[in-house]
Length: 531
Image 1 (cartoon, helix red, strand yellow):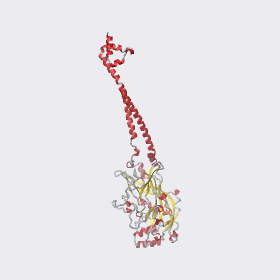
Image 2 (tube, rainbow, N blue to C red):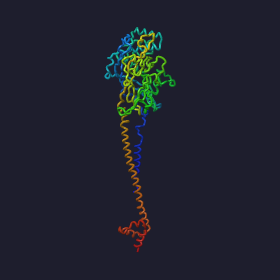
Image 3 (cartoon, rainbow, N blue to C red):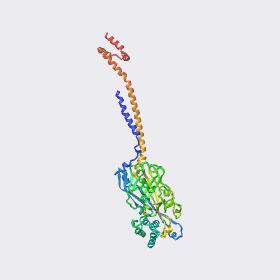
Image 4 (spheres, rainbow, N blue to C red):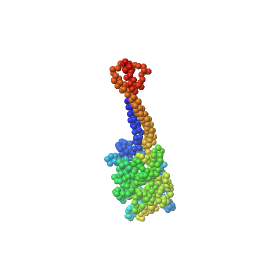
């Protein structure tokens, strides 16, 4: 009977186990480890190798509607209308993706291409004509005016006149975006051999030209995971004057910036988010704007492009000594053969009012033309993106080449582009919802059930322990009786027969308390029976 105490010991262990499980750290809240999971044939590896995000690019072309009147001096401003959208899907591949585990980096060769979607556009760009600035004439004339002297500029002017080059041309949208022939391009190639490596000039053709670049991305360091280490073996942009890290400035640094494919896990809302796109030829700063629960029940941080990102007051602005652009424009000519390409926000949002006054038809709208990135902060996964940017060309004139004089000191709008992704791929949504929407209440439910089960088993265990101890105490007098009887019988072994007859007496003749408390009554009966 004493072994009944043993039943409570397994219950105690069971209770400890259940309490341990119910109060154990939630593994779903632990930091993700992309460094260990970004390996061959892993899910995240294939997502980097071939991202399945549906990234679209809408392009609007500025059509100039009063060119003859303006050039004749009859009207003082140029009138514009936007034609679009012409919708493309952007495909990004990271070729030759390899992981250097020793250094904790990933290497890849990015390849980006656009595919036209006529069914989502206003029409096929082959069938729509526009009147637009002649990129070849404006770009080459301005470049020569900035860099060369009399003979080069005078020669260019005579050649352009002889070839019949004009400031504006009527062409299809396809030609304007992907390349058209102008004899001045061939002239420039002859004048400056090795400088221009293309026969036709087009806006998107130059933006998306394959440069066979290669990049390194950080994996090992938690705070900078997924940030750029180097692009073409350089932590900075040589096109913006980068020489070495010690003499570099934010304008020409790219190390530590993100492309936006993923951010560091646990990205803080207090951090500035530097975004780099090769086409933009510079880092553009985003700052935290708001936090909300999005459409899929996920927590979202919104980072928006800083209002001053294109201003000279931005810490990312490059130093300028001459031919400086006004506020609201970024000179990216260094990345495009020295052509005077300038980026701004669409419809001249937040630009110098003096430039805006040169045109009619610009309708800046902060809601429509701003840029932002929504991310899930725990893993740093992008949820949606809107990036709006406008390409312009800055025109300057040499006294030896007056062909561009009507447009001197004007920044001519060309196109504006909206790059956007409305939602993550379904597989990303499923993973995030399982982790952040479905798992937490499920885990809480299991923890509550485990706690209740552990509590009940604990109560039961303590009850059995307590009951077992009381049972043991109560049974000790019976043991004393047994010992006493054994000694008495041993002391009077010669009277065993009489004792046996005593055991057969009636209940009313046997006074059990007397036997327990004293041996006198027992001795007297033995003596009486002997007589």
